[in-house]
Figure 1 (cartoon, rainbow, N blue to C red):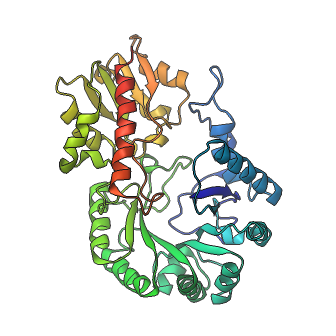
Figure 2: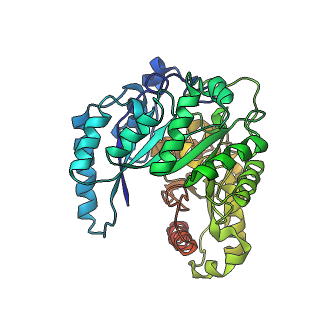
Figure 3: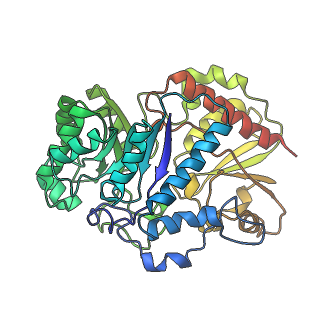
Length: 418
């Protein structure tokens, strides 16, 4: 089991400069305080709370002091202890909004973790600024057993141009050494016209020789509907990201060619049939475990989730009581008030269910969905409808199925509530 400890960090500033594809590159950090987010934890008459403002504070305020990081870790460990669940092979995942290698107190943290014999997963490094193999040697000697490494490409020229890596050869040398000494989860950003399937195959062929554990393909995001929450202009002009289905098929193609786990972000795991494993034809039998649908409801969701939800509800909702309404946003948790303003209220039934993590104040959501004068009931659905395979890399099919049965049971119970 992993427990996250976050060291903060400002993108661009604390990671050796912006990569060309970084979705923080076009964010106006000086203007972030004016962003009025809301969430399910906000007080009834106040938009914004410590929970949803943390998104802004953490990316704006740079690295945290080590005592703050350790205090939060102790609180997380206490919470875990209070749940009374069995904890096996506890590992500390050190995360950052920037590059964790650049955290000035990293060695101090690692010394504390080493004292208590906690193995460490370095949550993200771009490799920029790494001093070659000796950096990898040093970190592994200090207790690092796993690393998440943004390789982008094994081609130094592409790293130099797109990651703005001044010493790409040194970075790749360190990556190879990490592969020799510990587990490595590598990744790339699929920039159309730059990171092609041929380029990914070349990179993965080398990484397979080096012995990586997993590889994540991240779909390039260039517009607000793809998840650029704080951006007012594209990250790179003139580049149109791949349609999700095309991206999903690319992930599947790469997965079939190599022995290590290959995943996509946002959610794409063709090997296990995720996301929404219950939408697969072969798993229709599990839908019989869900409660019967008794009430009319509209489920408002993301453009990526909608097709999967439609398949599931077509099979369990014989009377057509539930309709699925997609907004123009790839990820449900990033739905904001503007997305609800664009909805045709004629399609919304008496009850509407929103994604659990949508960045909306509950009262704002209610106002927007009743602006036609009809008093609708607006509620939030489960926090997650499917188990993210990038978090549960080694999860078995039964675990993903069990999780979805539980989350969809919760969703149907919400539908049936008066």
